Image (cartoon, rainbow, N blue to C red; front, side, top):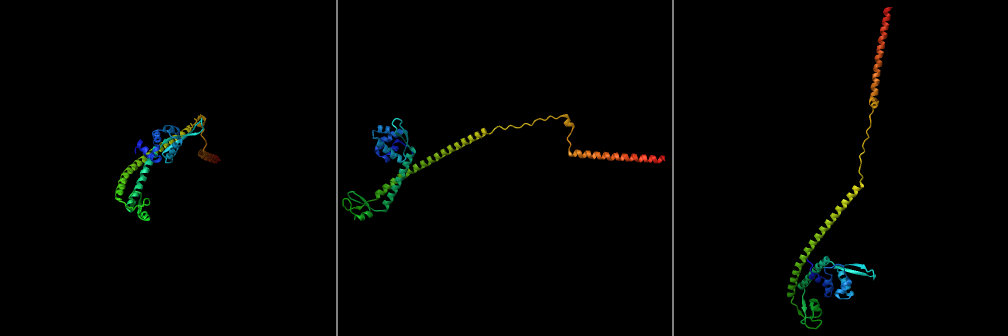
Amino acid sequence: MRLTKIKVVEILTSVIGEDGIPLIEELLGKENVSEFDLATKTKKDIKIIRRMLYLLYNHNLVCFTRKKDKQKGWYIYYWTLLPESIRFNHFKMKRDLLERLKKRLEEEKQELFFVCPNECVRLNFDNAMNFEFHCPECGELISQDNQDEKITHFEKRISELQKEFDILQEQRKVRRTDTRTKRKEVVSKKKVTARKKKEVKKAKEKKPVTKAVPKKTKVTKKEISKPKNTKKGSIAKKKVAREKASVKKKSVSKKAKKTTENKLKKK
């Protein structure tokens, strides 16, 4: 629903009455309007203006901000209309009116009504019996009312209102989906920015890691010529020494045999 000036005035006058039309015109298209400025421009007492503004505030149709006057020391209220709340109020008014008309249509179809010839009252069957089918104001005999015209009028009015209400409901759903998508986009953007900030913080907190370079050891000739003694080397050396000792023993024994043989020959 497009909120035109006429539509806004119609919605708000249903709350504060036709006396508040000048106030509504001063608030339209403006933000943070002082209540004293509204009183001077509408040429009305500040108390009347405040009462109207508080009525609109109770229906959630306006909002206010207050600031303290440094010179005088009291608070001044600045008022602004709320377009979304005005739309919802219009939607609610249509819905309530539609429900009331449907109830009236059911009553007209289910009950009998009696009318005074002077059009003083209109009573249902139970109330008419209590007054013995006489008008409680003028005393005339009351007669049954023709309800067909009223039933057709209510049905026509309900069909028109139902079409308007369906359109308003569809528009409201579209606005809700749009607001939800916008909120999701805002939330997703906030999450992305928060992640980026965390990543930047982590990158700043992390110190650069320097790899330890191994020191070059100088190898001397002596170290190369003298290999380290290992267990395997010592075992091998022992075996060689044993073999040499056994060879020496054999050679000594052979020499001793030869000397003994030579001595025996001389004899």
